[in-house]
Length: 317
Image 1 (cartoon, rainbow, N blue to C red):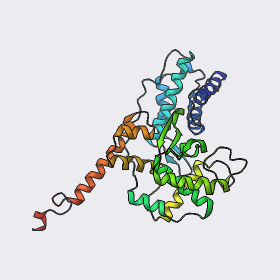
Image 2: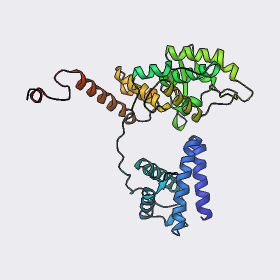
Image 3: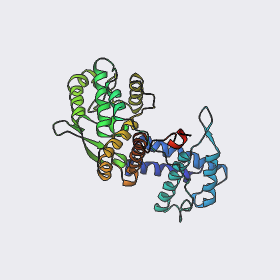
Image 4: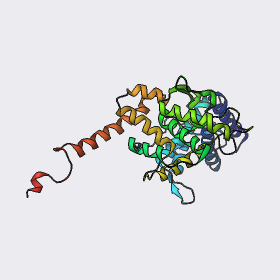
């Protein structure tokens, strides 16, 4: 790997962190994609970005599509290939803006077709069972209740939730200030149940968990540090098992459920877009497909002349 490539790659990753304000998790994903990309170029004797052409990028994507990962050697999903192409495209646009190259060879590379996967939200009854499932005793149980109420009540991303500071919560006004993707800040209303759970946590649980490491962090672990995304995910999975839910439940499941239940209740899709912090309404509209699917299921299971199954003609012979 030449000095030019190393320098350009480091500059780009610094750009993502400093200028675009992306999270460490997102920058780490870009770093992995670009390491694989520059290693591929180096193996083919390409030591200058000016020598990269469209065919080289297509060959790289083909190698990713044909590759495997993990201990089970699973093939890469189309979404992983698409994300890799997105990283490479963003990198080449940066090189063009910085004057490192005169053109963008990634521009004409076709993005792989992705299957549309609808999120599986929890029903209102399942959410209730999750919230009422047996909790850990003491401060951790009160903390976990506040987390669940806030994830479902405000539709936060898990990164937004664990990044909250105490000053981001206004219980009197009933809102939370979330820092979303790209450093975009938004204010989200918080309902009565979430406000009550947060008030109990802040007065009775957080002081018990707090230490000199806590600073302004809202949700704390047993050592007083900021709670991690992974710990929050494990807590939620454990709570789902206690609730007897036979579906995979992640923090994002509650975000899906928040959006779907709002739309089912008659909320405008653009209001839900603002609450979720989506840059484009097209991203939010996938939840309208979920609600339409739900309406069809209710219709076919409830209307006497629409129920699926054996027809009257077939029944009567």
